[in-house]
Length: 162
Image (cartoon, rainbow, N blue to C red; front, side, top):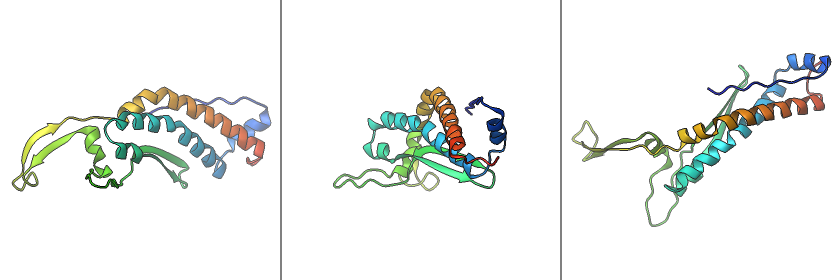
C-alpha cells in the first residue's frame, strides 16, 4: 500500500486548527486528493488496453466510496460492467475483463464439471496492475500535493473549528 507524508508548517493557530480537522472538511479534502491521484492510473490503463478493445478502454473508470462513519475514502480504478453496443459484430461484455487481466481456462462443450473439457489456458494480458505499478510514485506525489492544497484551501475558507 502506498503511503504519503504531508508536512504543513505555519503559525500555531493554524496548527491547532489542523489538529481538530475532522468531519466534512477532512472528507472533502481527502476525496478530492485521492480522486486526482488515481487519474494517471486510469489513463495508463486505458492506453494499455486500447490496442485490445475500445469497449474495455471506455469502460475503465474511477469509483469512489466514502465511509462517513469511519472517515475513510476508497478510490478504485476498474472496469465498469457494461456491454458493447456494436451493431453487426458481437463483442464480449465488459464484466468478463477480469479474465483478460488474470487469464482463464478455455473450456469447450459445456461447463467444466458437466461434460466440458479444458482446451487450453488463455494467458493473462494485464492492464490494471501494470498501470498501478507504473504510476505508484506519481500517485504519492499527487496525493501529497493535493492534500496540501486542500488543507490550505479549507483554512482560507475558514472551514476549521477553532
